[in-house]
Length: 468
Image (cartoon, rainbow, N blue to C red; front, side, top):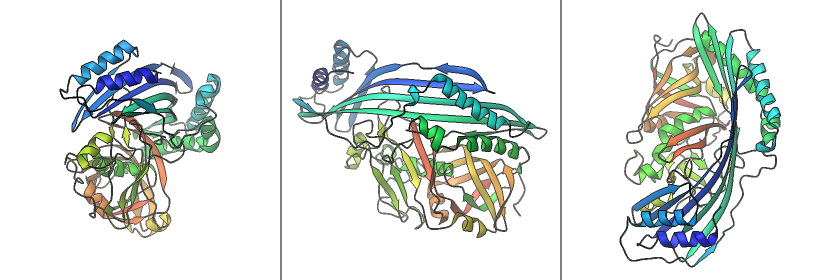
């Protein structure tokens, strides 16, 4: 998208006033999206965008800017403007450029963009048909598909030899929103599977008809749900999307953007127990074709499988280049950004509690009384204190070791430190769920995940009476 010779000029211009690292991030984005309302096309679009971000580091200082004008004049002017933030003798002159080889975790042959529009619309209509047929009380069904291809170039230098990386990010996600209405009110359910994969994944590997049917069934089922009881109870959380609780309450406080500044409850936790001994956790950006995976991060560092918690002990953080300076640790492939308009920082990719040895069904059988959370809705967390508040969009009463009636209005309240220590059972059924995570460097695709887990006791908020 820009020539290597121009990149060398821009890097040297950026480093002219004493910067010790310079980075050029160039991207061309080609998205497409389709949304259907009750089987009728409501919107379709494929806007394109491109631009360049430039960052200069000098010790513990950072300056960043961006432009959508990729001409030599514009890029050199941006470099000159940003470098004016420093006023020191030149430390680095970039003399040449190399292109390191990177392992390819994402391999796609049947690109979604090459599938005829009629076929993609037909797929979404089929999803609608399956969901709508579940029950007459299904009054509204939204189905959609979004797919994005990013062509990326990264040039960076912290010495006389600059690195040049190229990368292609391709991700697709479908979604189903089912709304059911009855005398009891209105309930909705949402499913949004996604992957860094081709069209065959969504048509052959993904059981999309089963997902569409389940979306309708869950919306109807929740119409008859009673209010959730409140109090301190044992809670079992289903595998997959249940991992969003760990993502928010524990994952964000393990990012270097928080830990390096002492703004996280886990800032000084390396080598210390922060969870029950049955808990181990990872952030792995290398899982082939997963929603949160990639070949390199937004700084050009190859993605890695990073261990965060081992047998309850904190053993690592997610570290980007800049915050790694404060920690005196090397970056580990977790710097991410939404687009060229954002400066990269440490972010999660595919973050999960590792599988344990327990049979999920046995975990339920060994729980005489409690709450079973099958899915989460919204929530909030304060990384500095670890306090969180999460609402469950699908929950049930556990009674005599069996999953019984559904309840609504269930909220889990606590802290990241508490929830990690309260885990006493970990299933062997690890599953990942797809979502988008918003933070300082924008919204990025992430997988959350876990096996079935049990919390010995946690505060449950609800409008019902005492659980019995």
